[in-house]
Length: 138
Image (cartoon, helix red, strand yellow):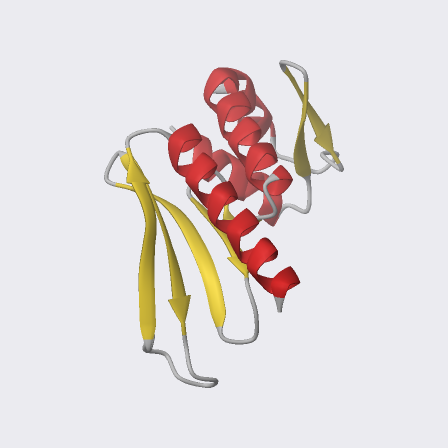
């Protein structure tokens, strides 16, 4: 039996997309999805709706979806990015700065950690707003 994230990833691999419309899930380009996946979507509707809502909230905050329901990211400039990840039942957001073409970060800053997606997302939005205001002053 598939879990919510596996279902969403399987849908993506088949070139389809799950769209949230209210409390309903619409399958875009789902013509070639196997029956087992479409059945799993119905079986896990509540979890999928919650995950797609998180994805939509993250997008509205200016983040990109790296792994649906699990990892979001935003590029601040050529060397710094924000990561927002579901880790061991909680959520954590941090900023990393890398020299070009180097794997290891030269600096990192924890933006927020918390038990809920909404709390950490709020802190990420506040951090992004701070960065935007700081850039306007220079």
